[in-house]
Amino acid sequence: MLRLLQRRFEGTIYADRLVSAEDVIWSLRAQKLDMEVEAIRRSVRETETILEESAREIRIGMTARELAEAIRSRARERGYECAWTPQICPLVSTGPSSRIGHVSPTGEAISPDSLVHVTFGIRLDGYCSDIQRVWYVPGTTSDPPEPVQRAFATIVAAIEKAAKALRPDSQGWEIDQVARDHLVGEGYEEYQHALGHQLGRAAHDGGGATLAPRWERYNETPYGKVEAGSVFTLEPSIILPEFGLVALEEVVLVTDEGTTFLSARQTELKVLDVAGEE
Image 1 (tube, rainbow, N blue to C red):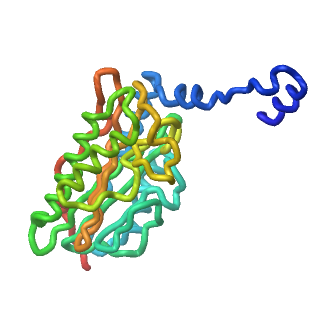
Image 2: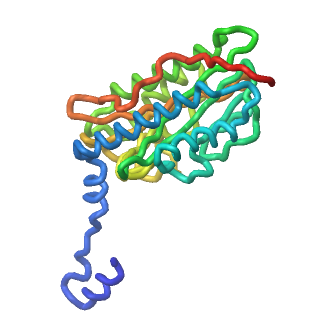
C-alpha cells in the first residue's frame, strides 16, 4: 500500500509528505478498551484453571512432553486454541536440563527433588493469555530446599517491584531495570530476555513499549513509553543448576493510578502431591 501511494503521488507536491501512522496504530492497539481487558482477564482465568487441574495430574516419571500434551488436551476439550504455535504451547521444562525460551518440550522425565515449569496461553473470544507457573516435586524432603525457596521469593519480589514501578509515561527499559537490579542485588545473574511484553489479540501484542533492556536486539522498543490501558506480562527468571527453572509470568493492566493484576498471582511455591514410578 505504501508503494501504491508513492506511485500515485509521484510528481505531485504530496510525494515527500507521507508520514507513517505506525506510532498512532501502535498506541491505538496498546490502549485496551474495558471489554478488551475483560476478555483478557477471562482468558487468563481459564488458563489458570487448566494449569491448576493439570498440576494435580503430575506424576513421577511423566515427561515434559506428556505434560504439555495433557495441558493442550484440556484446552481443546474446552474449545480453546493455543495462544501461539501448538508445538511449543505450552512450554514445559523440568529438572536441571531446563531451558529458557520458545523450545519444544522434551522427553525429560519428572523426578523427585526438581522443579516443573510451564508457560501456557490460550485464545478466548479473540484475546490471549500468557502466564508461567512453577511447582516443586518433593523427594528427600517434603519442603523445597532453601536455594529453591530463596530463588522463588526473589522472583515474586522482582515482579512486585516492577509492578509498582510500572506507570504511564515510564520507558520500558526502566521497568525491566527494576526487576533486573533486584535479582542481581540478591546475587543472581541477570536474565537474558525481556521482563515483559504487551498482551492482547496476540500473545506478543501491540508495539511501542517493550519491558526490555537496552540491548541491540530489542531495537527502539525499550525506549517506548508505557500508556494507560496497556496490558503487560512480567516474567523474570532464575536458573538453578541443581533443580531447574524458577520463573513466573503475571499479567497486569496499567492504569493512571498504577497497575492492576489480571492474573491471580502465584506467591507460594506449590509442592506437588506426586506418585508413580521414577
